Image: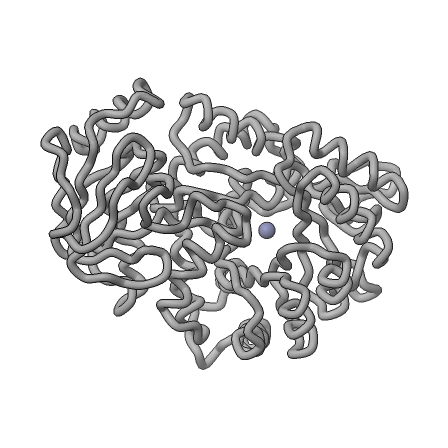
Length: 418
Ligand SMILES: [Zn+2]
């Protein structure tokens, strides 16, 4: 670990929220969350961006520290749209074993390490999509970050998530066993109490599983009835909170969209009709391309197009339908299924599956910020919060440069620098 890094790291921990001098950032180019600009500079004072534009137009206070970033692209801190800090790759430990055999305490400590990996990879905000059996460990990690105990991204958390009775795992045990599940089961009117309970325990939004692999032959089938989804949305919304839905079947997606969820996660078997419906109802799709890719690799696919599994072909097809429909796409990879810190994998796959690099960059910054109700994040613009990263190279010509993160600033505090 370079000395400068340790110094800054310690400083950031000890001095939150006391800010040092202003920073004048001079990269080769700036992606402002919407467009790429050559020859821009950015001034940060306290935890805010106070100027951004052509270098010559940016005032440089004499106490400002100049950070030159030749060959780098400066951009808003990336917003991870779908994470599980309490999970790690299934080729290292099966999901069932993580949920059933590891204590919540162990998982929370691991999650704290994952949080730092997300931050250092340039993901300065993370939307957490369920603790997968680890109770409210996500809420605790969020508190630890906010109190300056550990470094990590801004977190928006969902807590335990809600499933119907009988649908979710782990499964396959003698019926007399009460097996701890990866989410909280509830049905009918009990959903009112459970949604409120999750809110009371720290959920920033509610996640539901609108379908799951519980059909007669293990196929994905809808779980909640339309009126149950509507009830969940009604209760959450009256507290000012959004509901998001896991759904891979067209019918699960349709029910969720009609009930008023804000995003649909996965959407593998989405049809042109259902994407059109989502667009009309202002529901965004979080495609989680990297999760499907990772799972098939764990099962032995080495990534070659000749042996491309049917599920990948289908995912590419439905993602193309989604792009053609014009439905809003948020960027989120289901990181945790694959390695934390490798979050950029999703953005690489979005490009590989046919999305324009500029659209991918917009989605991962200003787009995600808008959908997740973060009006002060996702842009390099005067007045916005100073969540800023710099990557080596130009992600518009090579999206993989998003892996070359050299500077990370969150809330005006530098966590990593060249
Ligand atoms: Zn997930």
